[in-house]
Image 1 (cartoon, one colour):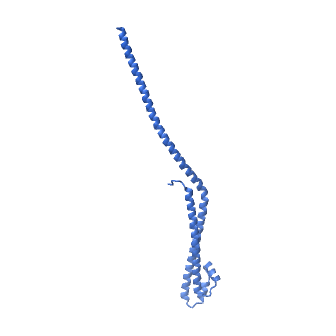
Image 2: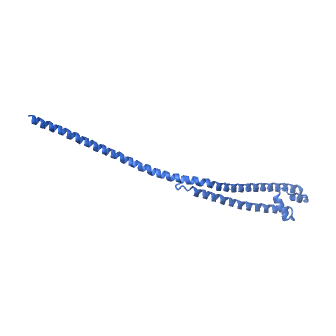
Image 3: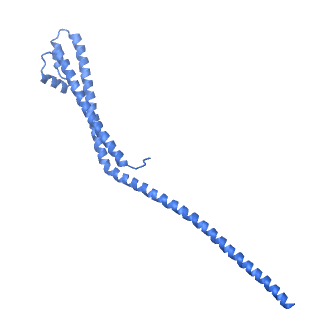
Length: 192
């Protein structure tokens, strides 16, 4: 349970953390894309040393590029080249699929960040109500404690009042009895 009730601070930290994660993710994605491009470029250069930068760029964009097939057709080691081609294409397609998934994940992180920011307007009033409720509960507890003390004092005062009234009644009864006894004695002394 939060002692201070600083839900807004926790929300801000969470939002900042998500933004930082998104930025780190985009940086990693950029580094990964550059790495994939350099690997594909090296492989294309191995297959065809005369490959141009434009052909490398088109191979990166379109996984079904014919550069590898064209280079293999001119090669004499066709069976080995075909297996190498299929392996390279498979890896390239896998890398492109991973890159698409990473891009989708980065987009989801960005959407999540936007959703968190949109939810902030709903969370702020809730946080304020929670803080108000905590304050009201503290005030209520103080009032209940005070009421308990006042009730105990009231009970003590009732017992004191009851005791004083009982004492007064006893004194009155004693006075009446003594007066009656004295009157009887003085009446019997007068009559004798």
